[in-house]
Amino acid sequence: MNTLVQSARPAVPSGRELARHPLFRAGAPLLVLLLADALLLPGFLHLEIKDGHLYGALVDIANRAAPLILAAIGMTLVVATRGVDISVGAVVALAGSVAAVLVGGDAEPHVALGTAFLAALAAALACGLWNGALVSGLGLQPIVATLILMVAGRGLAQLLTDGQIVTVYYAPYAWLGGGYLAGLPVALYLAGGVAVATGLLLRHTALGLFLRVVGINPVAARLAGVPAAALLVFAYAFSGLCAGLAGLVISSNVTSADANNAGLLLELDAILAVTLGGTALTGGNFSLAGSVLGALTIQALTYTIYALGVPPEVNLVVKAMVVFIVCIAQSPELRRMLGKGAQA
Image (cartoon, rainbow, N blue to C red; front, side, top):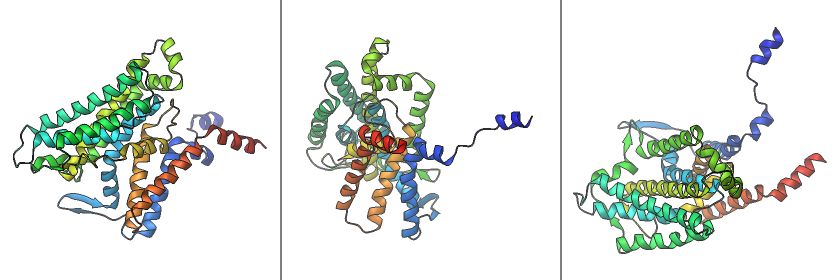
């Protein structure tokens, strides 16, 4: 009887099993950073409510990470198909420019705010469909196909804004990126909603399985009847749409559109967030929750560097070191060497 009772109890994972869990590996760097900040920065964990809004370093990190979270969610699906989208930053700039130009620089909008936002998202979606058509239809390498839009997309944004910063004085424009809802930033609700909706879609439909199959072996996927071409188009279109949302958040937060600098190098941060989250660049298995944790880790790292008074240039060096470590950790040769050492 005792044996039956013991067997019915859920098995408690051991420390070694917990350490091997993908989300633990993705969340450990974030936890280390937050603990270091709590020790080095007085009041880091302090939260307070002012005028019905929750303020604090933790809220600020999550809020600033919202655009990167959105970009990383879209990038996760692309990387899962063994691809990459380096046009994310340009799409961010283009979406923000479209919305700002349509709303205009007057106290009253030239077009309805909802129409401007929808037009910006439509432009971002068109960019994603363009990338998907080049990759799936013409068979271009993903980095080459998205490199075209990386250059052209920012150029289009500069043409729309005449190379100038377009400032928006219509007050409701700032709500998406700088407003609050129930005490928390609206951007957090947007990023969290997209993450949850995408996770449910991948978990409760065959989409997640098909993306993994295409990433592991696209030829076998086509022979098995999986619509590989359509999935590739969807992945890049979804990435473009997520980048468009990120562009709206960034533009709304600063109530302007800067086609020259908006989203600059955001694609590299998104790729880094995805790899930190445990998604291999070789495609196949992916972790959406890990990508969110990776984005939070990058923002926490940026916050730590600035808060400690370290020169901003060091931020790029630290990110480069992190990319190097991640690439080395994913090296099959290193894993074989470690496996041989463990067996010996």
